[in-house]
Length: 279
Image 1 (spheres, helix red, strand yellow):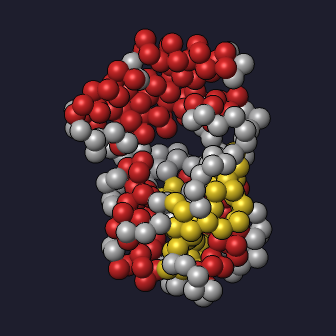
Image 2 (image 1 turned 180 degrees about the horizontal axis):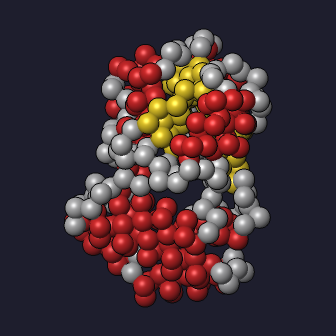
């Protein structure tokens, strides 16, 4: 079965080359489609150079509509029977695609994911703090006790994707959850191995956290939103930051926590006031 790999990109000039290079080393043949979501850095220029070197790379561009819309555009232009969705800051073991789509080709399932997802930049203190903030002490992105099904699909039959109309365009941070909600079933686990980059500077931590804050809490009731504003306020963040800095024996975690929670707080208040919810 033909495979189409679809990557949304937004200001990924530092990561996109490694991502594409890693995909170029796959044992499974595939079509590669990158949809740029109106990047403001040199992502597009970088992609155009790569496209010049590899004519098989399909480059699409859209207005700043978010990753859900970008994935939908890529899927619409794809020719594969199986769609694979990955991020521009990821890289992959050589057999990643083969392992990921194998159960679909064998008709054992309609969609898959992998929980073998390592933090590629574990040597970076802020990348480690990102994990610590989620209660993960080691070099993995997904907890070891994570179930063998997931609401986030890495690969799915294109026919199933089309049947439900793809991802929600305006779901923001949780856009990749919207597919399973429409399908009413989850992705099944595979042993595919990939690597993901955590935010590596405090600026990146703030930007990522603000985007999470703009989207994650808005579908909840007013009481939950109010409790979230308290949870991510400075006094609470400072107290939690001190405690976890001691627990993880990492003094810089306090600075991480203050910046991260400030991003969440400002993202949430921006969304409440009607601010733009895309990254």
